[in-house]
Image 1 (cartoon, rainbow, N blue to C red):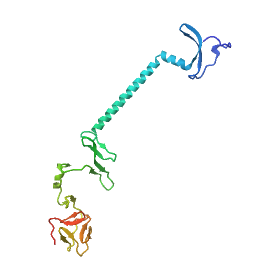
Image 2 (image 1 turned 90 degrees about the vertical axis):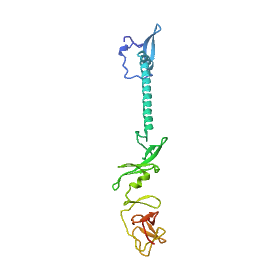
Image 3 (image 1 turned 180 degrees about the vertical axis):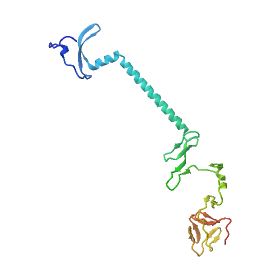
Image 4 (image 1 turned 90 degrees about the horizontal axis):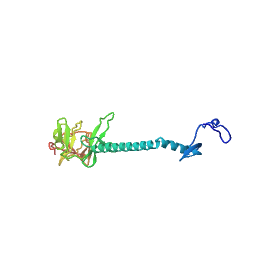
Length: 236
């Protein structure tokens, strides 16, 4: 650019600016509507004019619209996936669902209900499953021989390992088997202690023989802690 400043210094001899800010002002000759004159132009006004001239504003607007549309589609897709998974939780051929305690939940048709919890394995015990749902006689338990009704489950248990107490509960026969003292008697199906000492696992409460269930005595049942006779027992 040729010419001089008002002081007579050639414009080409002026120092070059290293940086500019939006509020800096440039001096230039502008022609607008047929009129040419020297004007001051701020850097921000010049940048806006250049951006508009090359279509930068339209490009930015289009990019923002495309980004917003992509974000909306991604959000909708994520919501659809979430809804699909929610609809499959706890259902057959669906996905497993856990409650806040880690128990497996199942759908009852309307809501998810905690149905099964797992006791983790330890160094001395294997992991166990514990049903949380109330089961009736129509419920089935899967065995190696097929599904068995709970009401028929007792028929599958060996009599040598299990017995039914006075309340109808099936109980496992303890591994330790004992023998009752000879002076223990029966009174209305309840065993009564004699003069001799009772063996391990038994105690006397007002003469009534009590059991902690740790030792099995043939022909007896544990009736809420009271040692009672089965139908096979005989005595006074």
